[in-house]
Length: 116
Length: 113
Image 1 (cartoon, each protein chain N blue to C red):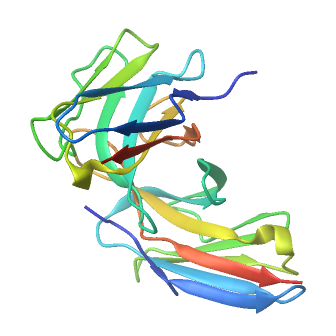
Image 2: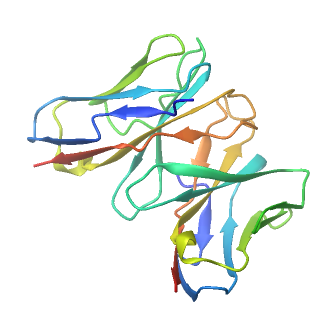
Image 3: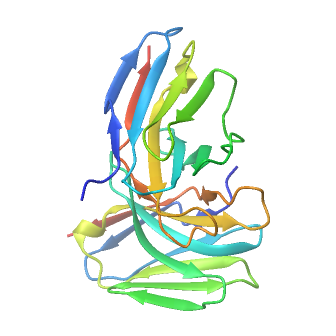
């Protein structure tokens, strides 16, 4: 079946512009995560959606970052007034269940964002 | 925040040799997972070990978990050039409102033919 799909795969934007990144999780997966990965670095947790519960936004670095998810389907990550330090790969992952997370995460290939 | 720290940060070996990567973490966990990332791609799940397990095998992979030392190791036996990738450990934090998966900083493995 289809995996996690992210679009666009690459995005170049000018400083100060807004960008919207999209994630289509695997059908039936209730949990969805966004992570940020700077060049040569590990993954930085941004936000976690679990079913219809309020999301865990504790990883969002500033109020310029926001994310939404419609039910248990598509999610969008929006970055307003982009800055050069926002340049990174943004990875989305979904899993069958959240909870104790005994189900692994399935990752998309990410969106590489470059802010010029 | 980074829960796990992998060691070494980089490892270079010859094909056929074994590769061992270590992960240390700070808080109590439900389980620990290892992921692999090829350059420019998303992460792929390799193996999950629960907090009440001490060792787990999957093909050429062997994972150990020592909860008393808050550490885990990933052993890749008889390495191949195709094993070249970054390897990350990830843990689920216990007793938080949301049980999020937190990743370590990764080990970059280079296997030369």
